[in-house]
Image 1 (cartoon, one colour):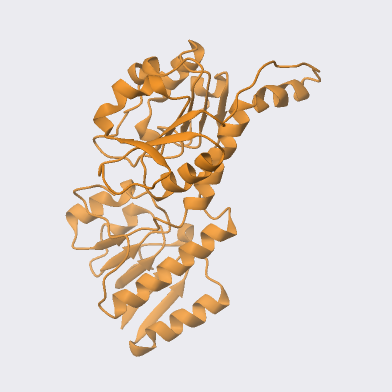
Image 2 (cartoon, rainbow, N blue to C red):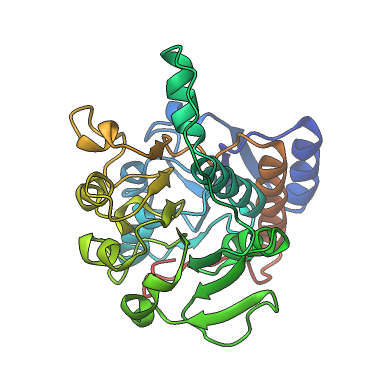
Length: 317
């Protein structure tokens, strides 16, 4: 009997589909909330659909495959190194949600919305002066994967000249003006008005955006991070904002989460900071995509067909 644990919120229709998929095999299916799962629940478990604490997975001797509801996988890489487990993620489910979120941050910073919110709270009627447009701007998307392409397409429609950074310098969309490698960053950062990081966490990207990178950016540029928090030095971002190396930043992730209350970033000027909420289940469209991908992969796994979004320990994503 295959024991399957599912923590991704499924509709009744989804559950019927899963029952049909698993009907050819004798399966014990449990729908549980991730925060309530214990080591006892995982005993003899072979398949997990959803994110649970990596610590609980260390002694799962029968686990064959785990499909994450997240796109980020860095907390689970060690499991791949130590066990013969297949790991897949939900890359592709978050494209719209994160692209729209990044766009919201860009608009807010370009139009000085945080300044006006602060003025409203203090009952101050004040014109904050000139603003900037996305139209005719130059944007660099560092990490031109699915999310980056979705954001790039939207910025292009709004009139921005969009370039990207990716490992494979071939096969990029026609709306991307130029493509660069990560090694080119130091030479090209000064050209762009908007820099968006959507990078995964790897040894190559750790603290990639430090004070030296911010020094190379335009003083009137804005920086957005909707990738991994560890790709940006939080201390250096604070210094960049305090010393006017860049004009503003919007980040949904930080090096340490939750960000300690004592960290200077909380007091940064011209910073929009949100608690890693751009993705998740906040948008129904995203959750529907997560469910669909998980069910498709479950069917493929049981039929011994290729899975989507297989993660390798070598690449780290």
